[in-house]
Length: 209
Length: 159
Image (cartoon, rainbow over all chains, first blue to last red; front, side, top):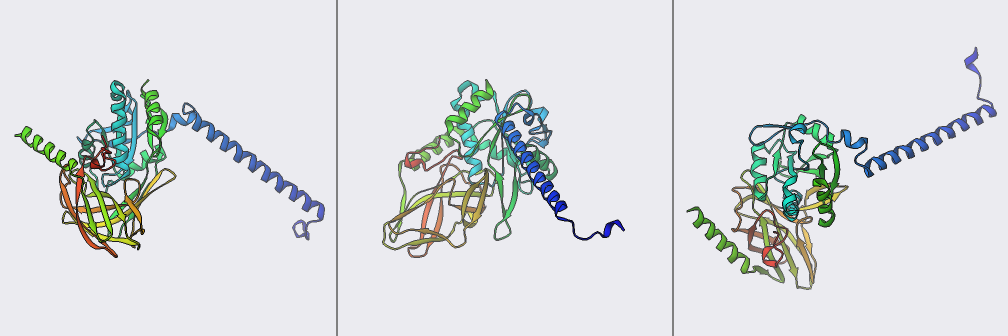
């Protein structure tokens, strides 16, 4: 009856304790390594991170055309996610991109500004087209089905979620970061919502260089 | 015809920009209420202004109404780890005694919910705000280009 042995003797306990500590140590080392790798991939967008970032996606343009990552290839672009009923961060960010574009002079038209609505329940592609037309500079307005949007959100690591408002309506919490992509569809960096114009301009200059 | 409309619109815009507008209610002064033009189908719009309380007692912005919207709500916006979150404020916002409440992009604002028509650049839309102490005050909100980041008449034109 080998399995009915009583409580483990002290030496066995010590061994178990040692093994547990070893496991903790290994876990710590692994976690640190993972953090280092992550930090590195964020510092150098040309690393592996840039290869899969954005990923394949399929969306619809206001004129009914299908737009994919391949359609956008050939010209760098700045992509931002929001919804047309967003009263604040979306118009602020899109106007800012329009302003930065004009500050870049001739280089301003060397990249596209892309706005993706993550509110398919309210925004048709045509609605997005009418919305982006307000900003006085060419902006590619896109949206898609829930499944298509889930795909692109995953590719860019974008968070968005409906938040109900009293009265049955809703608003949408969403990532307000602008993502910069090269002409070959590689991740080239981000512009944060509260980032100064000066650094944002530098990033755009680098993008179109 | 088109040109004429454009010139008229430009004149109205200039006139609107030239006449700084502010409103008084009790010890409150509401300065430069403004909004952004909206696209057809957009259905909501934000309203921004500065409310100065010269009195010795706290007041509170409680609610609002407007004939152009089904509802006027008070909202707050916050950025949390790069994520924008907007929430309705149901218990009002304080206008501190001898203090100022700024409704501005990136923070508190009023929201026109269920716009009955798009807001056009250059027009003014009536809004009635209700305060706990100062009571109701009707003001005309200036509709500015969507690219605005502040009131044009305040000298911070957003273009």
